Length: 297
Image (cartoon, rainbow, N blue to C red; front, side):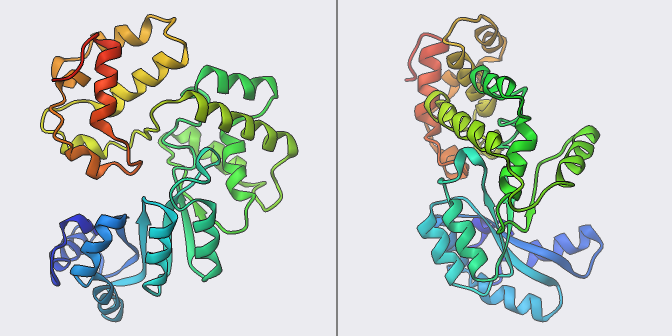
């Protein structure tokens, strides 16, 4: 349910009706109020969406009711305590265990008998080998630790997660994840893996300036067409190699003027859609200054 579209009771009906028609189903097993934060929670309350969930469960259109979440722990606790949820979905990985709902939120939801689904366990692929900063990849290589396996095992090592959504996009990733999960259980993480993940976590926090997961939610709202995730990825990689390589600046120069950071008109609409709460316009200004030698007007 796109809760940002809800203003009053009854606004939910056309969305659910369309979804059921497109799916060709009479019931959706797991239904989420999507991307809740402090602002969207007010939409939920104003539109009486909690009572609506109860009614649709009674009518048999929804089997289990939940929500996905992007905000801090206090907001998460407020939402958890407000309704008899069946499940929730949180962003959680070893590099961000104390961000958003975090470990506290995971444990709190589990303590109340709520199933917890984990999204972004690899942070949009950023915690996999090919996309990681060179210094982080080196830590894995030197210690003969697989970055994907250890990141997933870090989550499975904990008793609370019910399911991990690893974002598989290729057949080989499905096979690899099936192989990794065969040994998944509480206590499976080795001491070496734990130490390496702690070192990588510290390195990432010290060296990765923009915590962008490349979800793309910001793209839909940009009136100009700035390729925000691409721009941020180029900027991060440029700084991670201490500005010594020419590849990232060259990739940036090859972008269309409307796609570059300097095209930003500072409207700020994108900020409302960012799950990571990044000050996108401010960072675009820094990117423009770095890669185009100019500040935004």
